[in-house]
Length: 254
Image (cartoon, rainbow, N blue to C red; front, side, top):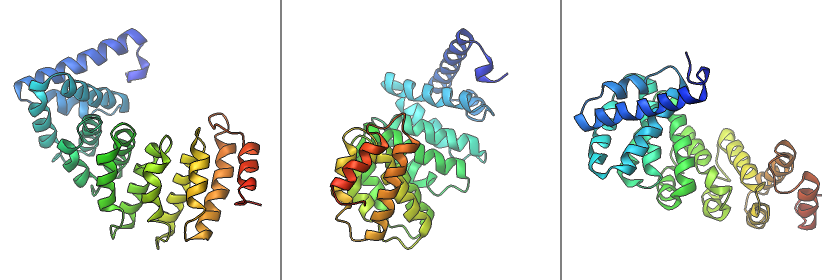
C-alpha cells in the first residue's frame, strides 16, 4: 500500500514511525532503517525519510555527526534511490548548513543516474531559496564546466532563488548567454521566463537582460516571458496583457 493510499491519520503515524526508526538508527550507528526507507519504491516514503533526517539533524546537535556519517556511508550504495535520497537529505541540511554537505552535491552532480542529478537540482532550488549565498558561490564553480549537462543543471538549479530575488542570479545567467550548446541556451531562456512572472520580478529582469550582448537570446527570452504569463496565468502577478503592455512601453517587444 502506497503512502497516499493511507488515510490522513495513518500517514501521520507512518511519518512518526519513520522518524523514530531513523532516530534510533542514528543513535546506535546502524543503517538498517536508513536503507529500508531510502530505497523504498514509494517516492513519498523516501520523502518522509529525508525530511525526517533533516529534522533530526537540525533538532539534535549531538546526532549531527551520526547523521553525516550515515549519509556518507549510504552515498556509496549501488542503489540509485538510496543515493537520490541521500542528496535530498543533504539538501534539507544545506538549507541552514551548506558547507557540511557540499561534497554530496560535488559528487551527485556527476552521478551516473539521472534521478540523483535531478535531486541535486531540486536540492539547489530549496537551499538557494533559503540559504542563497553559499549555494550561488558553489554554483559559480560549475557554471563554465566543459560538460554541457553540468552547465544546464546549474542554470536550472538556481532558478527558485530568482523568483524572489532575480538580482541574485541574473549575473550568473548572463554568463551563459553565449553558451555554444542549444540545450543550455534553451534552459537559460526557460529560467528567465520562470523568474519573470512573480511580483516585482518582471521589471528587474527586463531592465537587466535588455542590456545583454546576445540580443537574439534576449528576444527569445522576452517571447518566453510573454508566453509564461499565459501558461502560468493563475500564478503570475501580471496578466499577459499587462505584461505585454509593460514590455511594449519599455521598447523591448513590438
